[in-house]
Image (tube, rainbow, N blue to C red; front, side, top):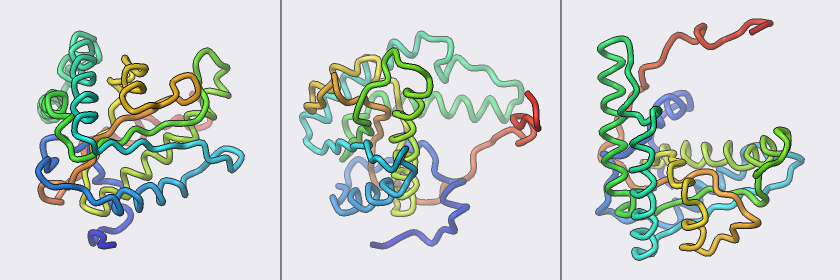
Amino acid sequence: MTLLDLPADDVLNTTRAVRKRLDFSRPVDDQLIRECVATAMQAPSGSNSITMQFVVVKDEAKRQAIGEIYAQCFEIYRQMPFYAGAIVKEGADEQAQQDRVATSADYLAEHMGDAPALVIGCTAGRADNVPAMMSASLMGNILPGMWSFMLAARARGLGTAWTTVGLMMEKELADIVGIPFDEVQQACLTPVAHTIGTDFKRAMRPDPDTIIHWDTW
């Protein structure tokens, strides 16, 4: 295991959604993915019950099929008001960053199936039409683990990009890789690939006090 020389804070602050800098020509070793999953399993689990599951897709035909479904979903997303390319920021720098996000998201929609590995983060059980406590608990058993997976990937020179657009056609995605749809819920799809360069930076974000509520909303 060879890790990048990055302090923990740098890993946290520079794990970006990587799209245009994914190296589609270089395979990803299975052991690297195992190491990322091992790190994911150290994330919080409600009642110490590990319900997270990771579907790693390396078969080319299945990757391309998933990529086609993702592209279909992305075309629907592109018409929505919260599409990254439809969001307008106030400042010029902020808008430039938003435009870069939009163009890179468009790029990934065209190339999702080209990534050497796709990983689908899932949890046992479904959060459809259940009370908030139950849905939060179910998702809480995969979302922290999925983020830990991505942090571990960054430390190993791998790029990821959290996507949920494909969940518009979750059943179709499940059918491609045999996920038992009635029993297992997907939470996230990410490409996994070595990155072209490792020099990622912090994203532009507002001041923390703009989202902190001290003692009351």
